[in-house]
Length: 549
Image (cartoon, rainbow, N blue to C red; front, side):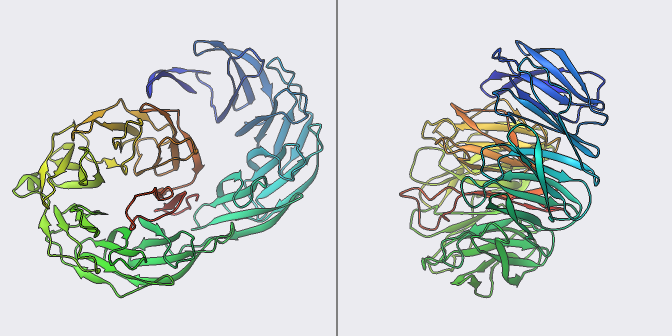
């Protein structure tokens, strides 16, 4: 187990190894003895090991807890109301409850719940509203994969209820999805394209799990209210087109596919109101065939696609914004082209973003609209890839429908980088970005003159070498811009501490193939009307499995 000490300003020191040579499967961190220093309980092959914090990031071995099987899941909570933290450990075919003594030690298991199908995880939450923390158990096998054990108030447990969710589920989480105070359960399926949701009816009863199916592993998607009911719907790319999913507004079965449109080699999708009718439209980049425009007709329906020709062998991503301040939405493409909108759903012939051969030798791999100079005109942040070098820079909007190359801010030997949408991370009124690659995240703070300060990289603890797409939003309602990163295995949230610094990341959920992620805050006053209005964080999986949304 490795420990990275936070040195402030988003910088972490070299790691220290705790319990060298031991297999550590999970850990829980709390102050177990009331000395104001956090301690650790680690799940090991034999059971659990307590590590006592001594200050300065140092730990010493405490109690060794033998459970008869490896502890793959741990949680700490006061289960009997005595003000001391108790330990719940799950592994093998049992869940053990150990009452805390308040001095960092725990008694022998007071309760041991047998789980014949095997247990892969346990979480603690008050599931029936009686004020006592209950146990939510994730079974490893069988059809009834979720069990809830109800606390009598003294760390012993009575009735255990079982619920069908999904076979071969890979992960689960609990939280209020529909009503404050009622904790629901979400289960992610493995090798099956759905989520399963158990809605808490109150008083310890749940609605059986209902699945959210997808016809194939989804790709990039756009989110907006396509049918005018005030709920956020989805337009999801597939291998042969785009599928429209309406939001029911319910915590179960929330999205239903209501239509699909055939396209050849779809690659990227964005949404905006291109014709000022108040209905979101779609633009889809086609890898070899231009940009398809699908005008919204209301009710979640779209007109047949009309294709804009693009002078490029291969077209990657596209983005939207009003780049000439005429009130109409324009489209920019990584093919070094901009399509100025006419305001009626049609577009002018494309013109180069930057004249000359610069982008011939340095092709654009990523493009993000941003206000980088303090002017009223929207600029572009770019990632270009020439040879073995990836370069971050800007195109500065001159206000006359032309751009000039801004100063280069960062160069790297890597060739697979991504940029987040723009957000103000340090509260100075200037838009910033996050660049992600290979498990690292670089906050890039704007200076207001088209240049940026690249901060030291933040580590995505569970991303490995595969951090990919980043989105921004205020995820905890504190008024500060945060960001989330997807990788092949999870989504990690970096909460802002202000001043451009971020707290240690945490996972929203673990699922195979977490792919494209979207978020949008409520549209702020004064924002253009084409900006979709929604709140939330949604992910899709682009490999077999399911993301969590």
